[in-house]
Length: 607
Image 1 (tube, rainbow, N blue to C red):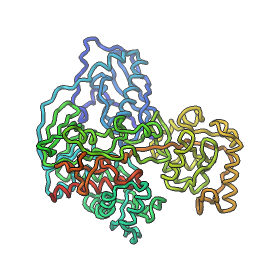
Image 2 (tube, rainbow, N blue to C red):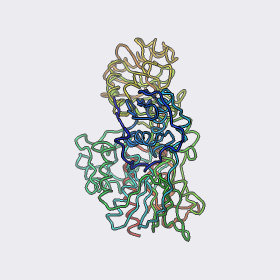
Image 3 (cartoon, helix red, strand yellow):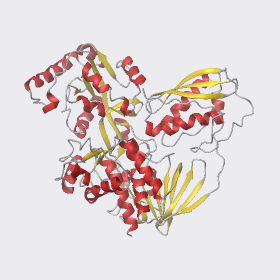
């Protein structure tokens, strides 16, 4: 079980680097509790957060987080810091940690639940400790301000400092990392020394462009996909050799349906491992790093962008002067303002709560007037499980394990509709056409046992999964199970005869060695679906990466609504629109973030 256990007391507490020193409760009346230890539960990003809170007659003495299933790279800082701050301030009126909003809210609600059980006044505690002491304004200058410290922002900062430019790197969350830190940890490496070392020497930029245009429905901006394909190789070698990011050469290049040549490698240690190396490279670079600082607006002088206005989490106002600004602020997947209604209603979000379209908001403001494109598109995968309303966790790693076994996909009517080993894009298209825009994994016991071993690796909590199975299809997410196919079909409202016929037909295809209907073949058609018990697990569209964004030229300079270059303003990473069309293939987003960040830095250095 994934869990964090924390025990925090006033005697051990030190000043928090995340929020600064929060004020003590100003209430004249002492809070009152029934002394003892009480359990509280709140819903985070990944399911229930359970805490044990110990009270004296008049104080919260300690908080233990006894179970949770939050994504470690997103929530670790919040779940380390908030218990300390609640004990120190004796308050439930604390701001959520930027980048971990849902986890923060889940934790605070869990503590509030315990407070209520202890006879405390939750409403009163929420009114105390929320205000911050005003801070002295800060005014700083550098050659370049980089906004956002994900893969693109870190790449930009490292390269700029390498080329002799001074940098201020601004990050609104408590640590550097962004989307690459919580990604699957894969990257396109076409044209790199590493790809050749791994055995592929006949790949090319032209082949990569062709694959991307096919995957992106022909909507990739030609100049930008060419730029990417011709520069990702040298960028990969630089990231490896200069930044110290290691790639899993032992695991080798991945064989993926989206690519005509094997061109994806995993990072050693996944996205978290790559991020640690990039953080170290930033620290070694000499760049000035500001975390917990929110960018508010661009400074415009005589039509050119010359810096940034920002505010720290502690209320400190910042004025940052620079000759150039690089927006590396990520996407808008967690923004009601920028998301399309279609994405909101058909797909589940599993990305960062900090992906709120800040770069778009600043760049399109009056006086800057940046142009945008393709805002209706997101990179969607067909393998999400709805762990809380509108929020997903991925089952992709488990799915990969069981496709060579006998797991199949069926729609809500109990029919197969797609080759399970088709590309994610093809499966997604089929999924969106089904009732409720969903499919089910159908597994026998052996398959389910294998599949479920990967759940912990993708952030599922063992206790939460037990709860899903206990609910047995009566609530979301659906993890239905039964001894017979007919009983299983009845649980989810399928026609039993249809599901039985689907399984019989698939098993006949295995016997014949040919799946004439959908073309599943080779090692993926060697095993029959066995005896029960059987399982149906929901599969819904999920997304983290948005495909639309700012219009840029091949120097990554942002363009305005009149098609003119906005002097002093560059963009890199996910905030750039249209690079990969309607859909990005596996490993492409990390590759683009690092490549575009490096290229934007070089464009500034060479201007």
